[in-house]
Structure formats: C-alpha cells, structure tokens
Image (cartoon, rainbow, N blue to C red; front, side, top):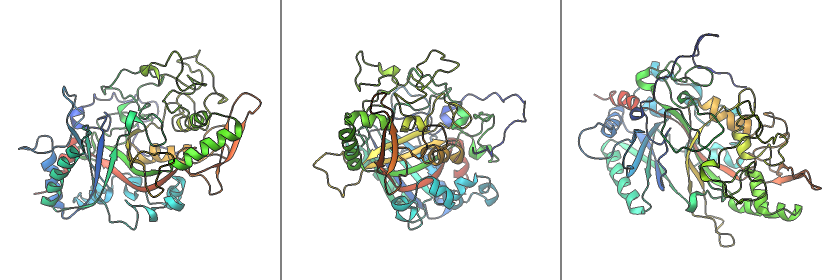
Length: 481
C-alpha cells in the first residue's frame, strides 16, 4: 500500500477541524459538476511568462470589463451558459515564472508527469499501443503543453461552442499563447458512453458541496480528499497541500487528464461471442463486466434484469454495497460475487465498504470526462473512426488516488481475493493473448471463465495538471509586472 507523503498530525493528535469550503475560491466542475453537453480542451504553450500571467489575470472572475471568465463553484440561481477551467502542467508552472524554490514543492509525481518513471507508466497500462510514443497529446513526440484551458457548454448548438472558442482564441493570440491542439467532447443521447452504459452515477458526495439528494450507502467524502490547504483533512488525517504556499495551493486540486480510445466493436463482439458460448444474454455479460446493467441498474440490486419491476427509483440507484457493514448490518451479502463479480469494473475501482488494502470507502476520485467521437452503429461503422472518453480524473494526490486505483486495483490481482490472474475488464491492460475473467452464475455453468477478453481501452494522450483555486490563479497572475 502506498504510504502518504503529505503532512499529518502526530499520532494521537486530534484532527484539525476543516474549514467550510469557500466555493467562490474553487474552480467550477471540480467538486461541483456542470453537466455540459459539449466541451473543448485547448492545449497551449506559453510564449513568455509575463503575457501568460496577464492572460490569467484577464480571466479572473473579478477582472474589469466584459469577456469570458474562469467559472467558480459558487451557487447560482441561473446556470451559467459556459464553464471555464484552467489547468497547468508542471512545465506550465515553470513557464509562468514560478520561482524554482516554490515549484520544487509540488509533489514528485506531478513534476514527473504521466510519462515517467517507467515502472509507473507500465503499471498504468501505458504500454504497447498505449505507450507515450503513440500519444497525440503529452507524449515525448508531441510539443510540451503548459496550460490546458477547458471550455464546457450546456447548449447543444455547435455554434455556441464555436463562438466561445473564437473569443478564447483571440485571447490566446493577444497573450502570445500557441494553441498546440484541441480536444472536443460531445455528450451522447441519454447520458451514455460509447460502450452503451449510463454514465455519471457514482460520483463522490463531498461535505459542504451542494448537489442532488441521492441515497448512497457510502459516507460523504471530506473536502480534503480533493481540495488542498485550508485545514481540510484527508483520509489520513493530513492535508495534500504539502509544503506549497497557501496563496498558491489553497482550494486547488490535481487532475489526470486522459484521452482514452474505446474499441466498441471489440466490446460488442466479445459480449455476443461469450453469450453464445455460455448461453447467456449478451446484456447480462455486459452487466457482469461493469457491475451494472447498461441501464445503470446495479447488479446487487437487480441481478436478473436491466429494468426491474418495480423500477429502482433514480435517487436509489447508488444505494448499495457488496456486503453487510457496521452501518448496514442487514445488507445483502455478495462477498462471493454471485450477483456482482468481484473483478467487475465498478467493484474494483470503488470497493465501497470492503476493506481492500486497508480502508473502506477510500481512494475516491471525481471523474469529469465526456465521450468524444460519433456514436457507434453496429454494421455501419467505419473502422478508421475513433471514439472514446476525454477529460479529467480529479483528486488531491495523483499517486495515492488516481495512480493507485489504476495501477493496483485495475491492473494488478493482489487487492482482494477472487481476482487472481485477472485485470479490470473495461479499462485493464489485457495481455496480447487475451485476458481472463470469471463470472459466477450459481447454476450448472458456475463458474463461467473466459480467457479471450480483449483490451478495450487504449491511451491516446495524458497530462497531469494542477487546477489552482481562484486565489492560486491570482497568485500566478501576480507574477506579471
């Protein structure tokens, strides 16, 4: 288990009482979602530090005049027509002229980025076709990215995205920023991703952050799991700010930005082939891989139907666990994975009340990613068309949260009993000969074991970004005369 490297109170010392979140100091779409229909992420290079700092100054919420502004997480009466976020790579921190003595205080994994060290790259599955040499963003064969400006638009009309993009591009030009690439995303109908699953169901609930009142057997997360500084407390009774100056780090977060190609054709072929081989409905095979039906209904609550009768209320669709807990001692016991396979995607990456490698309800991340590319049409698809998922995986510590989840829980078989010799069936880096996976059926077929699971997700690009709070952006903007 990775040990925390951030500051923590002495053993036995009482935890510091966390401050209330100043949502107006937090960039929007980090702890509080925006629910966009379109997005465009601009990868930028800094021409000179002073101009780049003035660019940040022009986008501060309290900047004079009209024009676009960084959006905050403050509550609104009317939803803003757009949401604008700014992230910096470590190269961007340096390019903006942050003093080297301050830049050196950032965590080592943020400084190294997603292409080093080699053992971490391998553990994340970024090998073969997913290796950094093949990336279109962030790899060694691409220009160095300093800033990632993310524009989210709720309007479905493409003209609205273009109008805001043109305004931003005028700002880029005015401040000597070079647009290296842009990466678009468009929400699919019915809130689904390309594999056909209903998306965005199990985001963490964070204390002090407004949101829909959905039933969830998991406790609320402390703000310190995702936000730095301000006396927030993380699950280790420490704070992920480390030694960064509060003026720069307070209310900031880190994000692993990933471009992930999804092989929908291979997915559909696999679930139908496996279904025919074992006399199973292909939709049940898909549910057993994910841990939820493509409708979003969890297998624990609905083991035999994607659309149970009576239906699961929308507010109850996340109210489940995999075994009884101290808080819910009478809950259904699925420790053997008869309903939801132990190795399924949602169970690996969110074990809920299970004590997987130490702590229950731990290693949470926030996913702010959307589909890219056109929807898949079986029998009418062009193999050259690329589709997948693009966006941020937000956390307070890249190594302890994001990298641990992917490197250990998704791509290793040591986290818990029942997954020996397997990897995550959806995002796992399956071997070239095909991956193994086990489905419990509790009948004469039990267990159903496959060994031809293809790799379904390929990394096409990655950046590690620091997402400053508004105060942090103001600190960076002050570096310009």
